[in-house]
Length: 172
Image 1 (cartoon, rainbow, N blue to C red):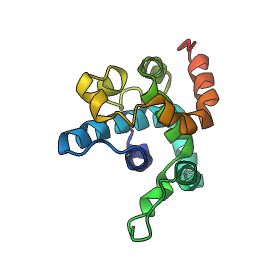
Image 2 (image 1 turned 45 degrees about the horizontal axis):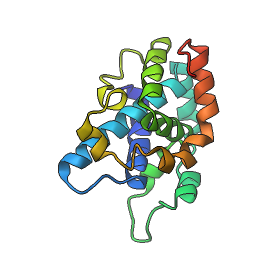
Image 3 (image 1 turned 30 degrees about the horizontal axis):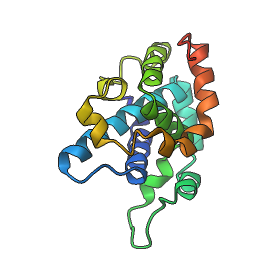
Image 4 (image 1 turned 30 degrees about the vertical axis):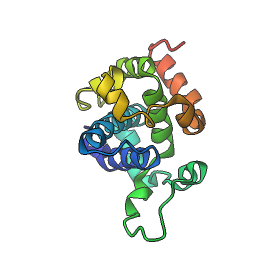
């Protein structure tokens, strides 16, 4: 996992899991979390492809979850005291992750584009994202549902497709 993007990846994956909750059960939760983390890792690596981009991110800070919360109605509850992580959510990363979760073929193309980034050796396996098993799909039914994700995916999809095309990933 890209070390300098760890907080952003963790917060973005956590937001996705809070907004699109897995079915009950520890296994479902773990499988959905793995997929959300893989999507956020790939999206963050593509969004911030160089160490200079990561440094700028830390200087300027991510966008936070306010707009995403408003769009999905999944903001923090009044009794939620642990909301500091929401400041590390990045709207673009979440939108790109939603695109990747909704379309495994796009995730495969994005994985190919990862070679053009400085993070290409740091992401680890993306198997659950690019080639989900039936159990993965069941555990992340809401997290991978294209219609449910569309409101978030559409926010920054054109920029993702542009990035992938620029790196020769040939998205249709």
